[in-house]
Amino acid sequence: MRPLGKRLGCAVSVRGDLRERELCKTIRDDWQELIARAWADFSFALPDCESGLACQKRMRVCMEGIVKEFAGQTVAVCSHGNAIGLLLNSVDPGFGHADWQNMGFPDVFWVEWRAGRGVRRDRADGRVSAEPAPAGDRRTRAR
Image (cartoon, rainbow, N blue to C red; front, side, top):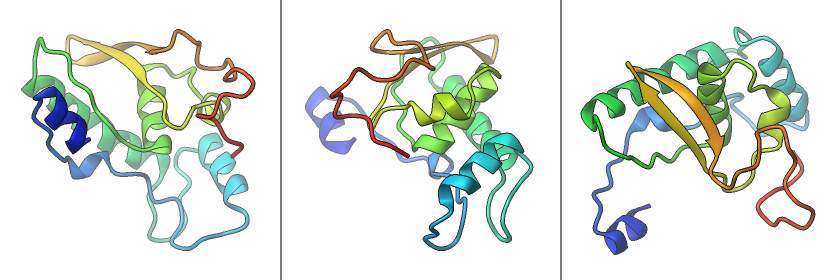
């Protein structure tokens, strides 16, 4: 983001609370089953790892701070897939595991905040959340 910010003449700041959710401490062959379980039960967490609820709250509080700090402005925010998915779920509870699976790499979502809360989310490219990326789209990969 720093090179893009420099090119556009925009300030870039790093917010630690936009980090990815720690689903597990080690690389695991069963991570897809773990993530499916985590989306089915937001309170699920492996020992010393973060639950979906905790990640969602962290992301929400961080975004609310950014919205307050930059009130009335358009802001670009970068984070990681599962953390973004959980944030989007907090804006739209219909956003679930299947939507997360269909997120691209990278992907861009537009979220409007009104009265201190996210009220709308759309993919910046016009696709709806559950719609798979077009065939041959290099931004997507199997999870």
